[in-house]
Image (cartoon, rainbow, N blue to C red; front, top):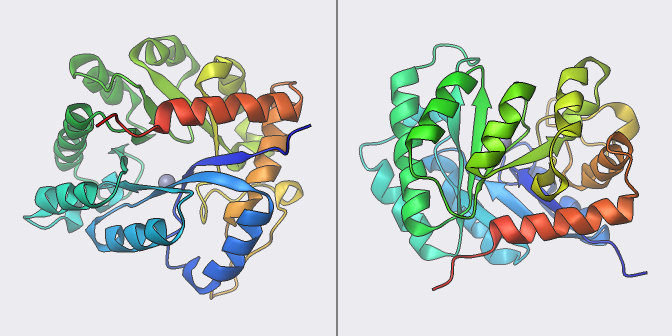
Length: 270
Ligand SMILES: [Zn+2]
């Protein structure tokens, strides 16, 4: 049997909390092997680090975007800066989105920043990753009103209403499952993922966040304060969780996820 190859649809390898352990993390990820990962920037101040990592490691698909949590940090030149990074390396757009869960949000600013980035993804035919928390109604309205990327788009760590899944699929959504949903209290999210068509499923760590329950942690890691964080190579534990949840042999699931990943994240033809 061919060796299994794993893809992480969403992480933040550039994060300060992972940085002190980059070389060890990289060795672990390669031994698994993780052959593709989308490393998501979240604001202007981390885009350079995402670019540096991608230049060192060809398995990384760099993704540049303004996350809704950080829109208040944007400079007057944020659009030009984003375009500049996208022009420097084949890349994706993300993580972008809407969030009414975070404290002191400016929803109008979030919408403006989200919509502008979405239009850019369409214009350039780039893969794009969405974050959405407590804003699914508005998200759906925007997606139904705007032109969308032909290749589809990723809803990372999807926790939206089950009833919305058929509408989102029609619009081109892919959905990535995180290990966080293996926690006992996340039954609603697990139920949702059982409804996702297999050709729209991806797997993610969201490392260093979304720490899975202890039984899925293959690579324990702490931040500088001793707080447990999610290691990108915990990805395999999440594949096993997904295989169990969907009652599918892990090799079959791995092959399907690889196909889906390549379909969504392939570079635009030039
Ligand atoms: Zn994320």
